[in-house]
Length: 256
Length: 248
Image (cartoon, rainbow over all chains, first blue to last red; front, side, top):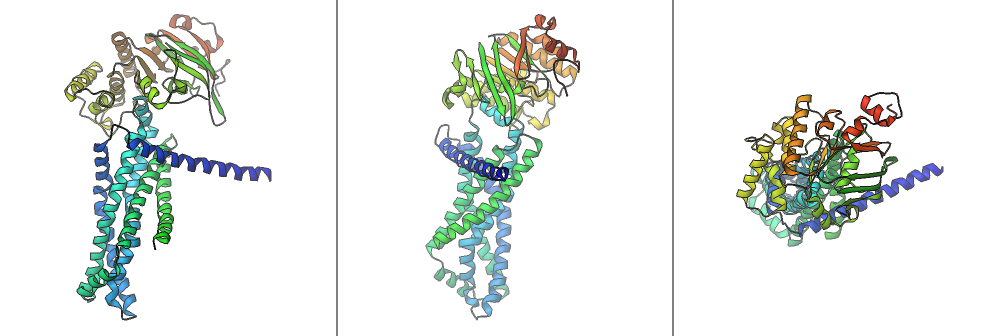
């Protein structure tokens, strides 16, 4: 019995320590952002890898998400003779929830996993030690630019996802199922307010932080062995998905 | 001069270093030998504070580097060059950019000056014209030489070599040893080599220290070491399974 209680205690202490380390890691990354040299070129490079290179997958998922919403929304609303509200229903759903969450999932799968694997591989092959030994702080060089790039890229990708998804639903609802184009956009204009757009924007910024923070932390602290790369990648992707869903609920409940 | 005083390091339940005391003479090459898992690399990583001890000190020029803040530690680290076991080249950069990296990060030199220095360094290690290749495109021996060029390009006072010949065939290993000796002759750095490439590594070493059971059990000149009557040293040099060192 005492050993069981001891195990619970050790588990709790270990998790508390890990959580503390994770937050210290983030604080350190932000602190290094403002210390020279400011690494603009690296930030731009990571905006390209996180943002530009995720664009195709975000557009593709946006189109099909919008098309599914158009299809499902139309048949659900038709039961109540309310198909003219399709634009409104799609826009609110996309802007507030699906846009930020699904584009964050896509970026996690496309870029977050690669980020964790790259840093873990650098850890295993002593490249991070090499940076320390060359008097270059690896958090400033490897982590801070990625976090800044995530904060910039994620809202832009989400905005693109939103636009593409709304037009995906338009194609199905208006061109295929016969909803009037005027009512589609008029409904959207009447129901969507600035708060809805702000909610989606703030979510996407926070998801950008969550993805880069967790993936960098897991990669940076990968066990120094060959399996460490796989372990860091898996853990970072799973944790990102869970954190995105949990954080999305909290933000929705606060910003409703 | 580097002075290691009563250094202790534990990983989990494993007490790797149990009070290491060692003086590394300035301008000389000292090789630390010892069995696999004896803590040689752990000791080496304490010399430029890549690892911090649980107890004990590492004095460099009289300054204890285990108690320095980040900025002061970075100043000390600029005195060091390190050749890692796998060379640890940044694999997102070409060999040229890897060698240029410490100059770009630590100095305000113009790109034309950096280019000249990098090309000189690459030539010194026999890699002229190979700068455009990425680390994944070159052999193990070339990676080690590129790592050596990167470590030496800033002309460090102290060079640390972690198993410089591991994974190389005997001829390549010998060429790396010769290169280290040649560079030492040119730049007069204080060298610390961790290796179990015996007796080849003795040819380039001025002093040998043996790490066993977490402490330095013997230290002396190469000649003294070869003639040592210390049973631990004798067993290790002769590669005998039976003796004071527990092998399995």
